[in-house]
Length: 197
Image 1 (tube, rainbow, N blue to C red):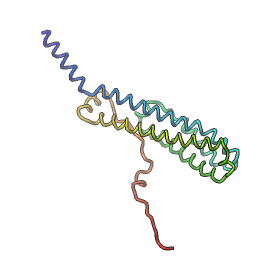
Image 2 (image 1 turned 180 degrees about the vertical axis):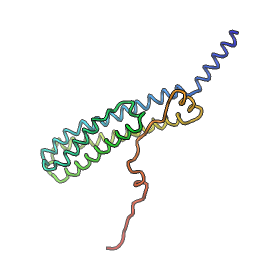
Image 3 (image 1 turned 30 degrees about the vertical axis):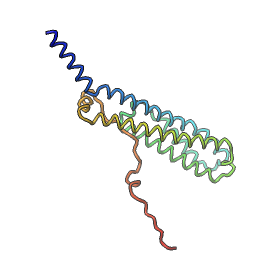
Image 4 (image 1 turned 90 degrees about the vertical axis):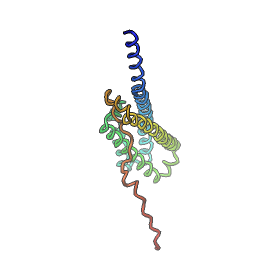
C-alpha cells in the first residue's frame, strides 16, 4: 500500500511539473516587471511636462491653447490609476493607452510651436528639457517593447496546449498589449505623385 501511495505522489509531482503552472508564475511576474518599467518611464515623462510648459509659457504666452492642451492631457494621464491590475482589464488598458497617445500628441504640437520662437530654442533649460523628453520617449519605446515581448510569451503559454488547460483551471487569461492607433492607415502604402508641374 505504501509503495502505491509513493507512486501516486511521484506521479502527481510529475504531472504538476509538466502542467505549466510555474511557467505562468514566471511569465506573469515578467509581465508585471515589464509593466512597472513602462509606468516608470511614462511617469518620468509626465514629471517633465510642468517644467516644459512653464519654460515655453515664458516665451510663448500667447500659445495658450497649446499649453492648455498639454496640461489637460497630462492631468488625464494622471487621473488613470495605473496599477499592475490594469494589464488584466482590456478596456482600462485601452483608456490608458489613449490618454498616453493624447499626451504624446500634445507634446508634439508644443515642440512644433516652439520652432516659431528662436529665443525659446536658444534657452538652455528648454534645450535640456527637450533632450530629457527625447531620451524619455526612447526609454518608453524600449520599455514598451519589453512589455510587448513579455505579454507575447505569457499569451502563448495561455493559448498553447497543454498549458491552456492549466490556464483555464487557474483563471489565467490573455493580457492586452500595446497597439497602433490606426493600424489600417499605416498598412496602406502612401501615394506619391511625381507628376510634372
